[in-house]
Image (cartoon, rainbow, N blue to C red; front, side, top):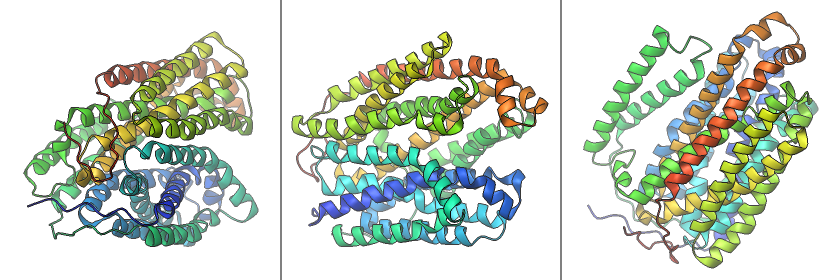
Length: 487
């Protein structure tokens, strides 16, 4: 069957860019905006023991659906899938705000995540629809900056909304913003793709959901709900292995697979996918616990600890936006990508060295700023390089798989760092003290030793990513949206 013709460039790319930026902000905010509202939610709905599932279910469904949205958007068009994703996200947000029990809220957060997974993928793929690979670095930089800002602003915004109104408005605020995204995409994205009816690989969808959920639940529960070497953990690993093997076999045989495994035969794409996963692993494995280091070891209060991440956001936005304009002018971002990942290696290693030496807070501000500079140069240019390496008709599938791998590796990075933390702490500190501040002070030495290891592990993984990156060829960025990428 011949591939569908590429869509014609839309007439209002700026509207699409605005809609994509807002969609990315919505998805990034809802990954952590709820965190500061959790105590109020527990006080209102009860179910304190199940509070973590408010976050976990959202992460599960958002991760599982990324590849599906990407593949379906290649077949049916980005515009139509954007409507579906935003509609599900807005409906889930409204329902979450109206939830009356903790069980209802957890189930409805899963629904909200089904929409958020589409926002993460389609926001990046839509940039590929309206701008050529040579133009994309400039606008992917904006996407990266928006994601960075929203990730840090989420807890602050959530706390402010909860204090001024109630935790329910953390969800209700998505409604007008979601409608605005729909309006911008409907007005700006003229999706003229020639549509061909193709069967949905339902078996592949179910197997993908099965092995992904099993892996993420293992990462979420391992070391907490049950030991890593327990019978439950071994059963999860076995189930994951069976479902994953069945999924690979199914995708190889399917006429229209959910995940295009054939893309991995493209060495540029395969290496880019690996580098992206390792970068996210290293970043999540270190940055999630960096505020904990500031509080437990340096004795900084929670608000100031959160503010200490602002240099990272500033550095990231600076190089993502300014660097993107330079790369678009040059027509190649390979040098920027290498320099960015190298800066990330240096920054993570310096975090480990400063922590080992017991350095004061200002030293860490320098490291986080350098880290942000590297992320702003690395993340958007890697996305553009991966998209530039595949044919336009595979843009959604390629972007979806990349987002999926990043999400999985991010969860793995958090799990590994969490396991290191649990190994050093042993749970004794929180058992001896009722007060959280007292528990942190009592276990300061254990936190110090554990987090030093987390920083060094993240630096080592990022160094591996940089070495693999050296094997990716410097491919000139194409000047047309629909030019085929040839290997």
